[in-house]
Amino acid sequence: MPAEPGAYRTVPRGYVYADHIPYVTPGSLDDLRGPTKGSVTVGPHIDTSPNPTYDLGRRTRKLELYSATVRDGFAVDHATILNRQELFRLWPELNLPSRCRAIWESKFPELAARPKAAGAA
Image (cartoon, rainbow, N blue to C red):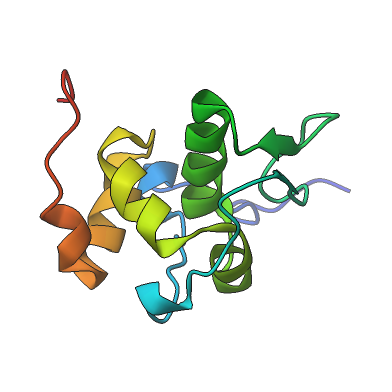
């Protein structure tokens, strides 16, 4: 059966998917009571790798975990994975899309007040 003209929806010219990603934030940074030691295993909506377990004793893995959780997690993930003090300490170094960072910093201006990481653009 042939398709009728206009039956298919097209993406509008100039549409950028990154401008429409629905980043989630927690209700309050005080809700962030995640662990500071040990390891954390996350769900596939945060990490689709075969081994989504992060050792909090390794700085690079902690940065990866926090970046992925801020970017892709839901409020319940933020509360159970992220720790408020650690988030403040790591915030300038997190690898986040600029829109995601802007959304979080707009809701939580205290994060924006953190000094930027050396070499950050």
